[in-house]
Length: 295
Image (cartoon, rainbow, N blue to C red; front, side, top):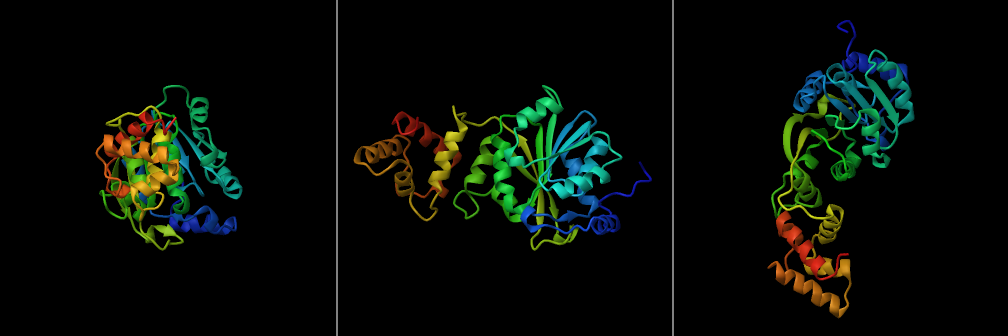
C-alpha cells in the first residue's frame, strides 16, 4: 500500500474534509490529527503487532485507524457521528481488517463486542484520540468494564493527563487519579502540540499508556468503592466528615457509625479527601461496610 497517501497527510486530510463538506463538530470534540510522527508514535507505544486485536474510539476520518490497521490483526472502531461513519466506509476501503461500528462507546457492551469480534482470550489493546469533553467518563468506562486488555493508549488534554499521576493534596488529585491507581499504571508517553491538529485546539495534548495492574488491596465491589471515593470528593472544600454525612445521612446512629469507621482506620473526620491515599480510602470503605453503611 505504498502508493496510498496517508489519510493524516495534511493535504489529503483537507481534501477529505472538502470532499465531504466536513468541519470539526464541537459537540463530538472533533479535531483531525495531521501529524504522522504522532500517529506512528501511538502505534509504537501501544506495541501493535499482527497478533493484536484493537478497539479504537472516535476514528474521525480514519487517520489513526489506518495506521493501526497496517499493524494489527483486526481493528474495531466505534464512531458516534453517522456522517463520519459514511466517510470511513470510503477512506478505509483499502483495509479489510477494519470494522466500524456506529455507536456511543459509553453505551457499548465491550465484553460482548470483544467476544463476538475477536473471540475469547484475544490480545486486546484499546487506542483512542479521546474527545476532550468526555475523556474522563470514557476512561472510567474502560477501566470498570469487566474486560481483559493488554494496554490502553489514549490521547487526551494535557491537563487531564497530569491528573492521572497527580500527587496527594494537589488540586489535580481526585477520583480519576485514584481510579487509575486501582486499575492501572499510567505513563505519559508523548507530548503533542496543538499544531498537530486541524483545526488546532486551544490546549496541548498528551498520549498516555495505561498498563493493567493487580490492586494492592482488592475489594469485593470496586464500583461501590468508587462510589464512596466519589462521594468523599463531592465537595472538595468540605471535610470528609461533611461529605460522609451527605452520603449516608445525618441521623445520630449514622453519625456514630461513621465516626466508628473513621476511628477504626485512624482517619481524622476533619481531613479533606484530597489528603487521603487509595489505601486509606480502601480501608475506610471496608470499615464503613463493617458498620453496615454499605450493603
